[in-house]
Image (cartoon, rainbow over the protein chains, first blue to last red):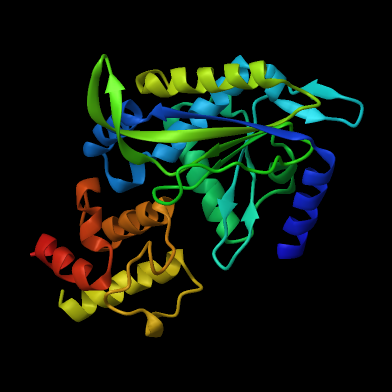
Amino acid sequence: MRQAIAAAMVRSKQTIPHFYLSHTMDAQPAIDHVACLNADRPPSKRILLGAVFLRATALAARDCPDLNGHDNGEGFVRADAVNVGLAIALRGGGLVAPAVIGADELSLAKTMAAMRDLVARARTSRLRSREMTAGTITLSSLGESGADAMAGVIFAPQVAMVGLGAPHTRPWVVDGTVQRRTVVTMTMSVDHRANDGRKASQFIAAFETHLSRPDTL
Amino acid sequence: MTHAEIRAAFLHELIGIAPDLDPATIADDDHLQDDLDLDSMDILSLVTALHETLGVDVPEADYPQISSLASAIPYLAGKMS
C-alpha cells in the first residue's frame, strides 16, 4: 500500500506543475445547520460536516467545469459528470480516494449515505475498481482536529485537489462586529497546465457561497 | 445490564468498527480519537451501533461522554436505568 501511494505521489509531483490557493472561510452556518438537522435524528440518519463539505465541493465543481476532469496526455478534458474522490485514511496506514459518483446530483442525505458506504467498504477492502478510477476531482479533509490547512497532491490524471484543514474557533468579523466563529481553511491544489489562479479563485468563491447557504445543499 | 456487560457490549461494537484494535490492550482512559485513532465517521458508526444494541440514543452534545471506556460505561448505565 505504502509503495503504491509513494509511486503515485512521486509521479504526480514530477509530472504535474502544482500551484496552490488558500482561503479561510466561516463554517459556522454549516456547523449550526448540521447540529440543527441532527438534533431530532437517530444516529443512523445523522449528517457529518464532511458530507456538507463534499456537497459544496461537488456543486463548486459543477459551477467551475474547468477544474473537473482529466488531463489525457494532450491536454485537459472536462468530465461529463462530477465524481468527487474522497480521501479516506485506512486504519493501519495508507489512503484511498474512491469517488462518489454523480455527487452533484445527490441530496445532502444521499451524500452522507454514500460517504458512509464508501468508508465502510474502504475499511474492509471492498471498493469497486470503477470507484477508484472515476474521480474527476478529489476532496481531502483533516477531520475534526489537527492543523489549520493542508495542501494536497493532485490525484492524476485529475487536475485539482481540494484540501480542508480542521475547523477551528477564531475571532471573526461578521457584519462589522467581531464574533466567535468556527472557520475552515480551504487550499486548492491545481494543475497549472490546465488552469490559472483566476479559475481556482472562482472555485473557492463558489465553494464558500455554497457553504454559506447550507439549507440549499 | 451490569457495568461489566455494558463494557463488553461497548468493546464489541468498538472492535467491529476498528478490527485492528486488541480489546485486551485498550485502557479504560484511552481516548477514542486521540489514542485509538477513531475519526468522526467511526464515532458516528459507534453511536449508531450502541443505539441498535443497547437502545441508547447518544445525542451529539453527549459524544464527549463516550470518548473513553471510563466515561462511557457510567454514562450508558445512567441512560439505561
